[in-house]
Image (cartoon, rainbow over all chains, first blue to last red; front, top):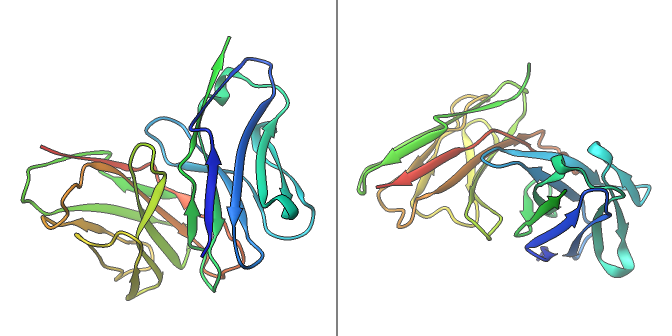
Length: 114
Length: 114
C-alpha cells in the first residue's frame, strides 16, 4: 500500500530564508509524486509533480523538489521565502493502477515572518 | 475559462437532513473525485468516478452518496447517516489515463451541521 508522511505540521521561516518542507513516501511501484498548495478557504493548486525523467522538478512560484529514490523522499524547497508563500502544503502520491487517485499527506502549514 | 465550480461555498444543515453539494467541470475530464478535509488530517477520498454512469467508493464513503449522469457533473449527497458531516468538501477532476495526471480542484464547500 502507498502512503505519504509529511514531517512537521507547522514550519515557520523569516522572509528571505530558505523554505524546506519534508515529504517521505512509501510505494511498492514507481510513484508519481505531487506537491499542492492551499490558501485559506480555497481549493488546492498544483505546485509541481514528478512522474518520470529528471529527478529535480521545478514548479511555480520558485518552488522545486527533488525525487530521491534511495531515501524515498520528495522534499519541497524554495531559496527565499516571501510573505505570499504562507499557506498549507500537501504532498501526495498517486496510487498504482489505471487511475489518478491520490493519497495525501496530512499537510504542513508554512508561516512566514517579516 | 475552463475550471471546476462548487456550490454553495458555505452550507448549513440541521441534524437529520440530507444535503447535496454541487460540482461542475468544463475541462472535459473523464474522472472526478470528492474529498473531505478536516484539520490535521489532510484530504480523504469519499467517492470517485472514472466515467459517466460509474463510480466507486473511496476510503470514507459511509454516509455519502453520489451520481454521475453527465460527464461534467458529480454531485455529492451527505446523508443523515453521516455521523460527523461538518467539514470542508473538495471536488476534483482529472483525465483518467493513470499516467500521473494532476487533479484540478474546485474552491470547496464548507458544510456546518447545526
